[in-house]
Image (cartoon, rainbow, N blue to C red):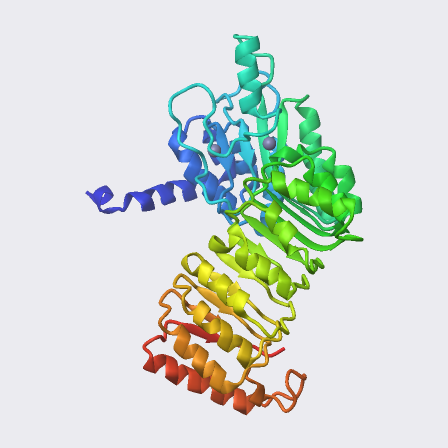
Length: 464
Ligand SMILES: [Zn+2]
Ligand SMILES: [Zn+2]
């Protein structure tokens, strides 16, 4: 029996490849192939760039939801996403179709760790783990309204509520504008039945984004990243958001931390009870970290504060904040720490010892003395996976001491260390680096790691 010798997954692949080898045959057979074949066929068609087959599949997709998930989207596949949006059937099908479409949630977000379609539990209402829960235009809200107001929504002619899940990056480029025009066109076509649900919004050019934002329901947004805007503009956006998981602000201008705008910003932050990640970059916070920390939820996981002009007083507040016992990631890079007393930093690290996985303190002007002071604290962080402290003026004996302190941390796999000062004629001046001395340092560390039986730990450095 030849068939029995074949691996069933190989047989399935063969069937799919033979189907796709002739797209018109594939499309024609979509009406008859078993429903279970849709998911593997979709993946193969997407990866292979079979646009016509994909388009036809979306039109008669036999499940409630369709997620791109982790299928990789390279440049050519972007066209596939557009084709999929275009073929989404937002109005009841006219005439006879071989299979009536069931698709109500099309998810073209990329890199989401989920299956192509969510498991069904045999009830009529759509069950998708990723359906919108916040917008008044969501399927969930509209259907719960329907069931209380009008108990018979089964009229064939009216269109059912649907959702299109997207991540948007608004940078004002032609490509982006075309894509958004396509999305809007679809929403208009649906006569109000399609909810455009944006979960991840990145704004690179605020002036351009303004026109687009009025078409989005901002309550749906979970991740917001804004680059180059005024804090006033940011708070105007945040006022409509409640469910942010992560907020990333870079190069945001604010006239004064004593003014109304900063207070409004703190008020907005104070409402974000789900916030897990805050990234403030190039935001001059000197002596105001305390008010920021008071506004943030205590169970924040990730805190990035590079280029924030953090003062000694700020670090002291951080070490006493409720967040100090919870953070998984702390990035304080590019803050000058010319302090006499590293006690608060040491306390902070001790408090973080049970949770901290990633510590970044690059470009902080940390000397041997500063490192000596905080090293005992670092060595208590038993879950540390990555530590990065490049571009600090550290000597070779100190690096060796650090290595001895860090080798017992078994979860620590990446140490990004500074080139020790003796490798430069003039510290940190481009062109004055002695490559031979650096090579000797690397060789010496390698031997020491082998001796400590920690060759699994990667010690990496780089010159500018
Ligand atoms: Zn789903
Ligand atoms: Zn939504």
